[in-house]
Image (tube, rainbow, N blue to C red; front, side, top):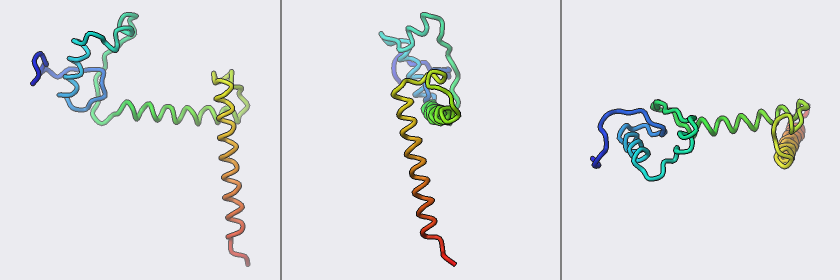
Length: 120
């Protein structure tokens, strides 16, 4: 065991699933010269949370971002402007190009199916 490492089970702000790693990170954050959360704590926006085994923060963020892109593309097709959605000009163009490529792929698949369909 490392010197100064608490053996108590504590809630921390890491996504670690093992309590040993979690406690070690907790000690590092509290005892380190530069606290990654120092600014957030100083403005009163930090909230220490308990971790749940089997839940990965990285996976949650990936799902949010994936769903966000789908949300933006869906709303662009519905007629919302990039300003309505808070999207930059370049990002909107990227979404429109991707939507065009997706439509083209679908059309090519449909044409291939019509040629490979059995003729009676």
